[in-house]
Amino acid sequence: MQRQRATTKVVSAFKARQNLGQILDVARYQGCRFLVERAGKPMAVVVGIEEWGNILETLAELNDAEYLESIREARREIELGQTLTLDELMEAR
Image (cartoon, rainbow, N blue to C red; front, side, top):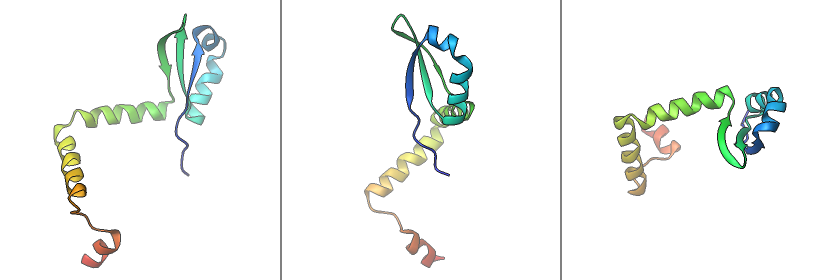
């Protein structure tokens, strides 16, 4: 099952307090993010636990110099056309 790209809804702190249970359910089960504002100023974000895990994983990857260098190298190879199609890879086996 492919998940939709998350949307972000802006909600006042007052409305967030009134509807916290519903906000938590929508964040967790529908993948929606909520930007909570107080007096029109962003104060916090509510995300589902699965998305929070993905955020932590991404942060860990961004702090791994070896991982980032492997991504840079892969991009260089793609730009230089040094890649194989899936069919070419299967034939090389």
